[in-house]
Image 1 (spheres, rainbow, N blue to C red):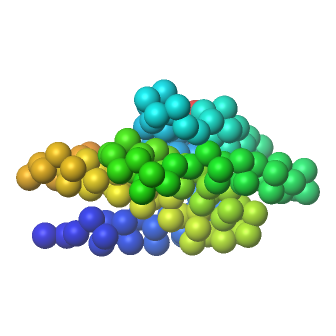
Image 2: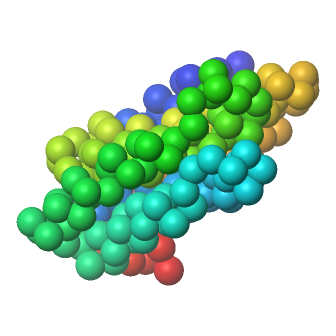
Length: 175
């Protein structure tokens, strides 16, 4: 049986082969999917800043849609990264599943933006890891025997990757 780590590695390698703006659109879609976990954590724990993470998501989307990274974009990223970092929970402070899922949401946006800033495809494509980590944590914390969550995530990312490979423009991955 294939492990979650092997699945993550496959997706990270495949995403890294995509054109840069397709990678960013892929990272946006993954990050957008994880965002509700962050919102729920902030509402329940009263820590974090939903608007800050939403700004990060919006910036990822803007970059993918415009297929543009310029000095202004880089400056926005540089200014936003410390805010996002400060809004991420330390799982040791909370010790609950919501904190871990929230951290995965923050981590996805943060890594994608750092990857854009550094023009590092490996960091951008590493966003594929975060939902698998969340699925594993849910399975582990609830002592589930089923890996249905991992299968569902794998199928979602397979469809998203197929779309990204077919797309001429990154916009097609988002719209």
